[in-house]
Amino acid sequence: MATFFGEVVVAPSRAGVDDEESAEEGCEETPEDREIRRELEKKREIDVRWTLKSDVLPESSADELFVCSKLILAIGHNAAAFLSSFILDSVCWEVVGAVKLWNEWCRTSSTTNVLPTDSFCLFYRLISDPTVWLCQCSCYVAEDQQFQWLEKVFGRMRKEGLQVTILSTCPVADYKTQESTLTLPSPFLKALKTKEFKEQVCCPLLEQPNIVRDLPAAVLSYCQVWQIPAVLYQCYTDIIKLDTVTIEAFRPLLSSKVLKSLVKDVSESTKILKKLLITNESHNNIYI
Amino acid sequence: MFVPCDRGGSSASSDFKGFTLLMPAVSVGNVGQLAIDLVISTLDMTKVGYFYTDCLVPMVGNNPYATAEENSVELSINAEVYSLPSKKLVVLQIRSPFIKNKYRPFCQTLLSWVKSSKCARVVLLSSSHAYQRDDEQLLGTPLRYLLTPDLEKAVGGLMQELNWKEMEKVAAYPGINDTEKVLHIPGGGITKRLFTESCSKGIQMAVLLKFCSEGDNIPDAFTLVNYLNEWLQLIKSESNNSTDTSSQWKIPSSWRLLFGNGLPPALF
Image 1 (tube, rainbow over the protein chains, first blue to last red):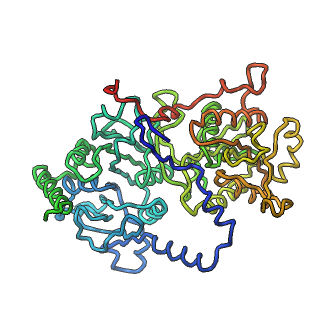
Image 2 (image 1 turned 90 degrees about the horizontal axis):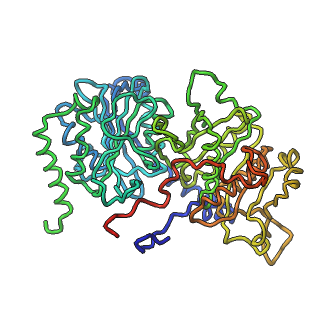
Image 3 (image 1 turned 90 degrees about the vertical axis):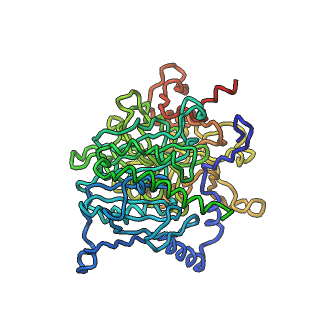
């Protein structure tokens, strides 16, 4: 398919299955194939490690559900950095869990001491109110792993009284509008909410025919189906890497009901933000 | 798995006994899915539940069939179920592609839902690559149908009356042995798998498909939905010409901007 500007864009075929189908028809799966497939599946399995102190106690508590009133989920480097600079600090928050996963784009490390440029997925809990949870997920969760991620994370939480807030970013080129994307003042925020979410939303809602994919969509779908109040703030940006302008775009959310009480000293935030970016730059600089 | 929208309330909204289940196959040009969109928006069907599954790529957006500001804010997910009890019709719309290696489990869960929900029959809207037609198929209508043996007994005669053409089978080993014929639906996604499994499980299923190519598939969707209408008579045509109902189908608001955004004004 050629676009208006002449470049050739390969449209993904929507017909799908052909290759696989013919392969399946052509020959029966051998035990060896099955073995490889099973091994691969095992390797791609998601492992959520909860490190709650109460878990160390009796065996039976391992199956108990966590009571959680607020879950704030930051997906992607920029959203995670926003939480790091404006909300999270080591005094008020403790790490309660980590997700270990393996796929073609990402291998998360097993340590909880991470650099902002690392790929990781960590859960934190507010020490003064253990029902308030944060999650920073800057790693790529593949399509076949998203459902598992949901089942393993939400499977351990009590659904009653839970409210979910999701922050995420995506390229402004994905935004569909009557105008040209060149005239859009990026970055900008758009929101999507489930039926149960009754609070005020801090930015305009996402218009049709725009859609959201991947992990944010998976989480929001889960919440819609199981009637959990949830809101997604999607930041459309033209810079995909970690950068201050995109992180600052989330700032209006600091006055939202869910985040207002959690904001830390803002003067510190700017410093932390700078530090985050410097760490990031040194990784990308060939002249170190 | 089917999850009704409002739980605890009346179970009437999820009672599909004797209903016809209409659904798309995710296939070339998304023709089936587009045709289903036309049916839902024209008949103004009510959402009754979700088909929650790990087999489809997750996606969310606001109400694709919004007609006004008031009903535009309503979250939609990748697989939803709509119903119209007055016509005994239930529709499953699929809005995203399948995850690799998940075709088989999807077909299994779907067919077990069909059985447990006691739907009388299933109509699958699909499409197939136009470039893979053989010499015979190049001439005449691009529309085909398939019926499982159980449905054939019930409505087979009607298809003759409508002058419909059955999907041809092709030789399994062309040139070597022309007697052994198999069903071949290139670009049809799960169509063949669902159909053959329905045959063996005794489920009444019809497949309606159109040969087409990827591109602007809106005209294909209209052709396919009119084809369906010849049989099920979902809408009555206003004119005497019974095949022309195109103008009566309502295009959903979400079809806007299918071919991209506006152009930068600086271009001119």
